Image (cartoon, rainbow, N blue to C red; front, side, top):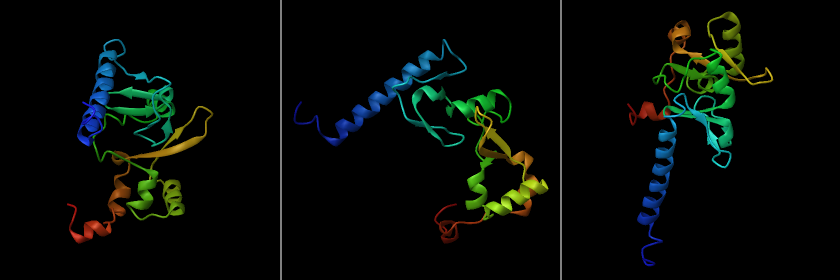
Length: 161
């Protein structure tokens, strides 16, 4: 037993077993709390699947679909944004993607927002300050027609389809 306890495959199997056990406990907890729940204080840190902020477990809302921070969870409950953890891919994009994937300078992005070409939903923290912007594809069809996604160098080489 001592010979194989430090073997890489054994360690990988141990880690997979631990994470599967944690996942099973969380899924059983859904019977009592079907809408999800905040994780324990000693868990984490985890990253929010909406705004990508890192937070300790007691500030992360868990559902089988994904993790959201306390601020994003409050914005979802208040109807500022739909539940994006349940949304399909390509139904929304973030403010950083406007710059990196569409080649729009941040100041130009602000101008497009003022003109109404680009419609974003500001996520606000509890103190009222905006901390992130989400753009729904259904609300920004004019922008997407006018500014198509730029191909990355990898896409131009034909490696990714």
